[in-house]
Length: 67
Image (cartoon, rainbow, N blue to C red):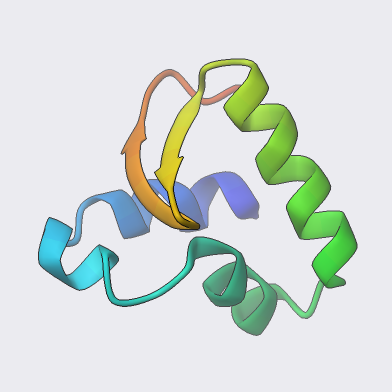
């Protein structure tokens, strides 16, 4: 679920993505807890699958299927 949101959101223009934090969008769309979403985003960032700046999604590369 989170994987599909990230892949959909990365297709938006950078100016649009810089207006909203990716964690807030995932929480709103999924209803998952903030701590759960932040843990997953942290793991993805550590693995080099996503790049964020100040909570905004910058890039996505080769996301694993489980996300």
